[in-house]
Length: 499
Image (cartoon, rainbow, N blue to C red; front, side, top):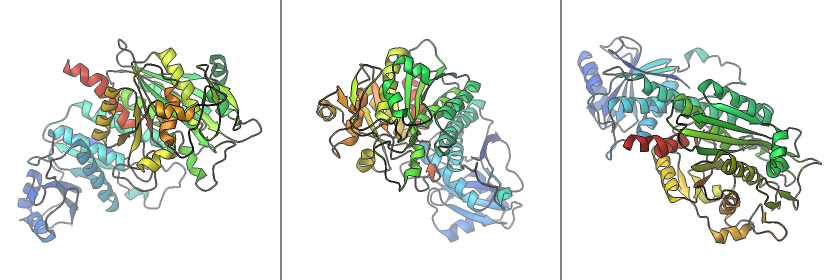
């Protein structure tokens, strides 16, 4: 990601400068000043190009009458006004343009006189956040490119007055959390496996997060038979990691629970070979939890939050669980394993039961790349939301709207619980073939939740993207980090502010 800064001061006399234009043709204050200095050069360029749409730019290279190497006119505005996501996508689009122009550094002039939908500092912070999110890149295993020195590195946003340090801290917290999640999801499974993933969580201690790694022996003592069964086919045993941020130790925690299947072959119910390399990202739920914990701690959120992730590999071997096996979960429920490729819900069964019994949360949200069925239902545009509590669901949907990490609520209920009734065990791990597969997975997890307000996010379709998105390049999206951060803010910090 590029470096972003919020500063007060005059326009630089050299380099690349970006100025705002109110859609379609009205120059902002900074643009008007440069236009006058250049003898109307900006106005003429705008008139020649025609009405400028939101997010589009006009590029003036070595503009006559100005000392700058480049001046970009940036269209800003929509008929319905700008929301946070609009401003973030504005920054993302600008950063991509600057990357394409091989600009190393640029300054976005103070956007006075333009309708931004928020106060100038908030608007600038949103634009900066979007620019950072869109310029993430994972180059760990690539040799430097010949043009590395001309890569876009820094965007500075000018303000009339110097902003409070908390704005930049909040931007850095978000970018750091999303980058951490994307890095984890992108790592190959020979590098990121249960034990190495668990050890990387210890990095969060630098932010003030308490991290506890539960070893395979401890999982045995606790009776976590479901997660151990999933991992028994691999030479790499499972681990569970508990992370706690006590920004407010006086309240019960909000619990974030993540599925962390570091590689999923499907086990004995083996997946097809085509596309199996993508199954390194079957730990996207765990990565989102880790990224959210990073973000919350880095911005010193006034909230008590605990994150718990189950890390495991699902591999075929002579010791792997088989279709037809019956296993016993930590809760004491027996589970008939019909399909070993429905392993994520087995991991979550033990995690949510442990969370309920040992961590005593006020609410619980789990995230998992759980089913292909949710992709059939919702495509790659939204994650599936299942919830036992309407207030929690409403908060999550509002956070999804705010951040652009879309959710769509899908049903739970007794009719779907019948899908997982077993003839020989308490429940079975799949439903009725292709019928309501996402709901069957959700009601399976619900069996272990108890009365705690709970939401399950099936993020199988949104953890990885095969194309560039407005706020994320092709690959790992980091979906869930910003959503969870905003959800926690609404559940705890916003309510305190209102009180």
